[in-house]
Amino acid sequence: MPGRARRAPLSGPTAATARFIAHGPALPHPLFEPKSIVLFTGSQDAPEQQTPQARALLAHMAAQPFKGQVTPLDIHTTGTLADLAQARADLAIIALPEDEILPALELAGRIKVKAAVVLSAGIPQAKALEMHRVAKQHGMWLLGPNSQGFQRPMLQLNASSAGELATQGQLALVSQSGALTASILDWARQNRVGFSNVIALGAHTQVGLAGVLDYLANDRHTQGIVVYMEGIANARRFTSALRAAANSKPVVVLKAGRKQDGNVAAQTHSGAIVGSDEVFDAVLRRAGAVRVRSFVELFSAAKCLASRYRPVGKRLGIITNGGGPGVLAADYVNELELQLGALSDESQRTWPRSCPRRRRWSI
Image 1 (cartoon, rainbow, N blue to C red):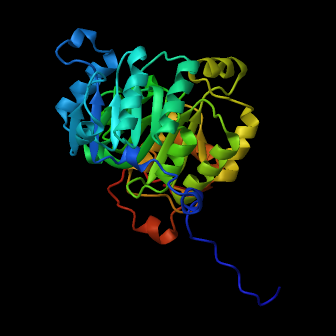
Image 2 (image 1 turned 180 degrees about the vertical axis):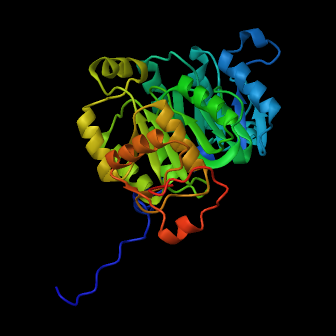
């Protein structure tokens, strides 16, 4: 109606916060923000009997000790609940052989641990569902099994087997592939890109992609999110979480399984539902997330998000030392539905005369 004031957009809580208000704790803070930890890594007197994940975890934590309290615990520990209560913690990190993981989860539940991460590989779905049941019974958040864990650099917490602790920054990385997580971390160290969180989900994890996005949307230390994904288990839950995250900060997504063969491979690797690529594109557009198609584009996006600067508007400037590359770049600007920025006459007159070549049509 004429003269009617436009309604300002809502700036209230995100979808995750609304669920928290309505239904109680909905975000896995104890998992990613622990103040105390219990470690289940097997006997340190017999390292040859430890899993590769346990040896990697202990090496990383020895190199950069966690800022909070760390208590080693054995599944064969005996004593009353009062005795065990001394080991009560926010997070249990479990890196044990397959047949010892369930007893470790049970013990963690008995001492009222609030969250657990299981560093493992090759756990079948039936066993994974049993671990989910135990975690749910004790009210624990569970990252895993078949996860490479996570890193929280600001806490000096490397609860992972993915490599050395990342440099602290404001970019969050979420990946459904442990190997690609390690590759991205290697690239980030060489390019001085830091992270607020690095989360390698893996297959059959209880805390999935949607729950992690909910958490990161509300994490004040995260200013941008980069996601590598292969598929989802709950489309509605994922869409809601993605929209909430993209509404509060930039989200860049690289999704595998776009074609038939990749689709089959992704289901074999992560056990996730891949679905139609066209539908996924539509979901990303509606949520406000940005999709990239290759690791080159993902790395470029990560460097941009790790910078303190953000682009404003659709105009793009080009700096070139040759005409041909400038023309090619100008063509690509139009393909991206951007606008080529041009210097004003005044700016061109004051452009440094020491510049050997000046392109008056763009910079």
